[in-house]
Image (cartoon, rainbow, N blue to C red; front, side):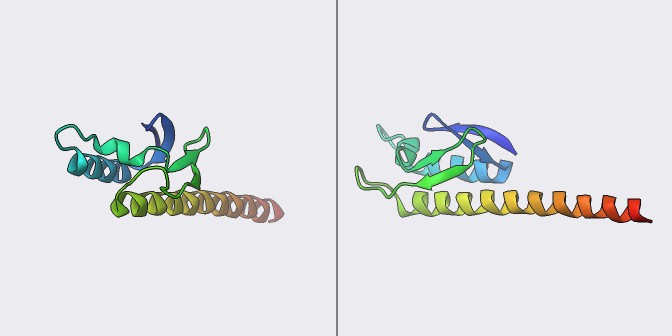
Length: 101
């Protein structure tokens, strides 16, 4: 994964996720409106780029598409973390099994 900067915050995204983000931003960038502004204030992330918190849009309006995208991204990040943890544990079990033989 690659760390990307979105509204001055780190986000860990695949190339496909970043491509979709750019398509969403471009679709809402019209005249004086910047599509990236729709993402502002909607999430908090850690230094690794994982979304820790989604903040409901109460201060300003945003798109339902943007909100669903962030929800999906957070879930995908969590699934990747779980998959990596499981892969690591399975490798540890395999090493133990090999050493036992």
